[in-house]
Image (cartoon, rainbow, N blue to C red; front, side):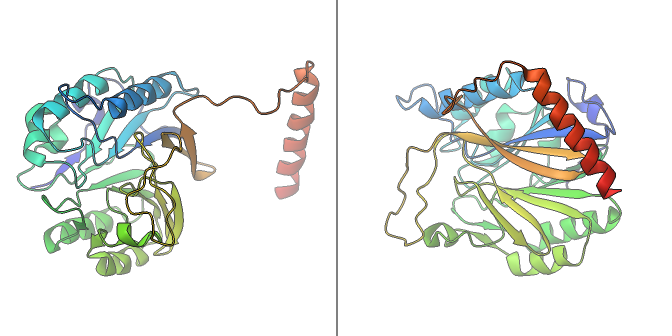
Length: 306
């Protein structure tokens, strides 16, 4: 049994405009929330800061997608903490599990999230936004690697065929390609070979958006754009040589911002949770003078490209 969110505004308590020409999705990933009894609460604090930033972001963010490793151990008390943090979010939050999650405990705490009420896998779709969204559960409980088994593959195949004329984005936790960090690639996604063939047979797939690696990574894969979001908790060292197993570095927590517009398609950005200090302070006081220059330049560019 899988779920399709056909009546988006009826299911979620906050109103999200339907069929907008433009919308924003904040992709948060690998939050690794821990329980209240733990002394290690930095991950929780970072997610709280991220939600606050998303709430205040201009223009308004329409939706948050959390692409797995929602908690550190999949414990019930960790999901309670996560629920409390998510309750402060202005945009609605949609979730898929990662290898650190446990479906039974997740649905126990988030029982009001109807899209998670499946018998086996938390796979679902959102169909009444300008882009068709597919959420693919790749979790194999008890194992760090992921899998797209035959059942999940056939479900995805059917959804893609039924919506072949719609621009589509696929969210999943485990990226379906190697990232170059060998020990992370060792716990990657099983079933990627058949998945790649399936994705390559469609021209309407705008992006594959994943997590798991704790680094921002972009790649052209299966004829489309593939993106791995950074972690809101901590980043893994860029360890191409493979000599720094599980090293966590001091890179700042961040999330991905995906901007869709009818005239420009999908554009993705990285947003850091902490506000950075300006390296060079601008001394320009007459802002209008420069605004007029750029408006004129834009008009000239648009005219040239017609």
